[in-house]
Image 1 (cartoon, rainbow, N blue to C red):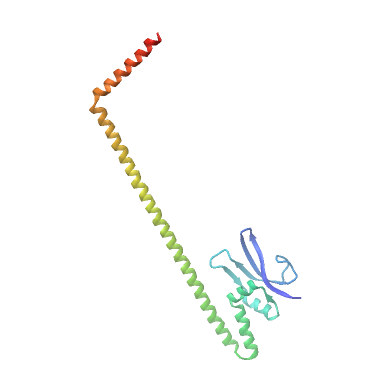
Image 2 (cartoon, rainbow, N blue to C red; image 1 turned 30 degrees about the vertical axis):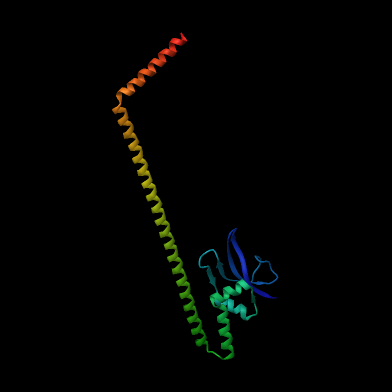
Length: 191
């Protein structure tokens, strides 16, 4: 029975996550599997990967073939390196302790890279938030300045209208008299 290490899709539409499984090559993608080795969630940044490295190495040593994506994940988590080191131990090129030290050193280096990436992402996110806040403050300041100018213009127009009404009372009175005589003339024509 040919065994493949592959991804099994779960999750909802547009938000997939995957199980990393050892399955018969003839079974369906999301069908029956032999062993669940871990999970892979590409929706997070960086992607979340949990893997049983020892279980994956056991399957690789027994002849299971990973798919391309599964191979990349196994390489990322160090399962392929651990298999390689185990082969060196079997041949006598390394001792078990040396292989374990090399693997631990590689894991520490990998974790440092992941931590640096997370730090950079958080810094970039904070900078983007700060830029957005500054831009919003600038827009609000412009709006307030325009509102003050508009209020000042309305107040100036109101003052100007009040001055003309108070300064020319005779002209206003004449206009009122003219309107009254025009209305009287209209009513007389109707009669």
